[in-house]
Each structure stands twice: as structure tokens, then as C-alpha cells.
Image (cartoon, rainbow, N blue to C red; front, side, top):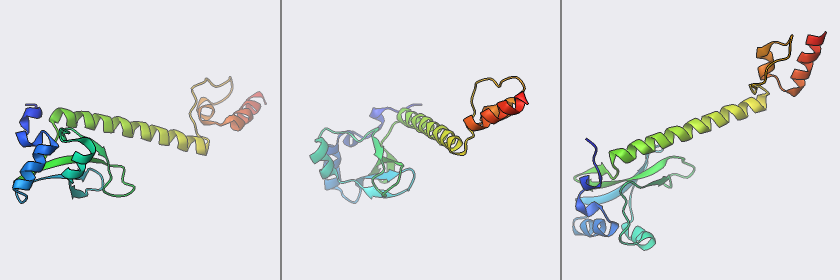
Length: 155
């Protein structure tokens, strides 16, 4: 069963409400941020968020690049504490993030493979090999190697 924004307690909807609840019972309620790569956790400065984004800013379904560890390329997401820490995102949003992360990683890996092939001269090309030239050798040959393959095929 999918859960939407209404799944979260009323006090988690706006940063100003989170601050009021946290100030009333600082040992029982809180908001933290964590990174999915470096695994760092930190308490959230709600006053700073209110100053930057305003009182009616919501942390639900929000994430941003890691600022907890220099150089980390992970994503930071928010959690609220009400006894234990619980995520401040819906299942539908988590599914979108998983898909976005998968697509980004797929594009990065494809780019790395292509750049590696360019640097080693092993780029696979789709154009057909001339008569008498091995198609597999032609597919991964750079321009200089292709000229040599053509000369060899002509004899």
C-alpha cells in the first residue's frame, strides 16, 4: 500500500512546525539528515533552513547532493525522530530516486567505458569492414590500424 504525504505526522509537514515540536521536547523529537554513500548523519539546523527557505518549507521528499563529507557524491535525505528515526519521503518518491540513480549510474558507466576505449584506441565502430578485412579487427581499430588493415587486405 503506497503512502502519501498524509502518512507523516502533521508536525513534519513544515519546518516551522518541526521547530516548535523540537523546541517543546528536544529529547523526543528531532530532524536529521544522512548520506546514502558516506553514511554520515547530522542533526538539521531548522533555524538555518527557516532563514534560507522560509517557515513554510517542507523537507518531505527532498534530497540534495552530500554536504556532510567533502568529495562525497552521495545523496542526503531527511529523517524525523519520533521515538526512532523515520524517513521523510514517500515510497513513490523513493522509487523515482532509485530509477534516477540507476539511469545516472548507467550513463556514467557508459561514458567511462567509451572514454576508456577512446584512450586505448579500442572504440567499437559500426561501419562495415571492407572486403578481405576481418570485421572484428575493423570494429575496434583506430584510423591508423584501419589503414594498415586495408593495405594488408590489398596485398
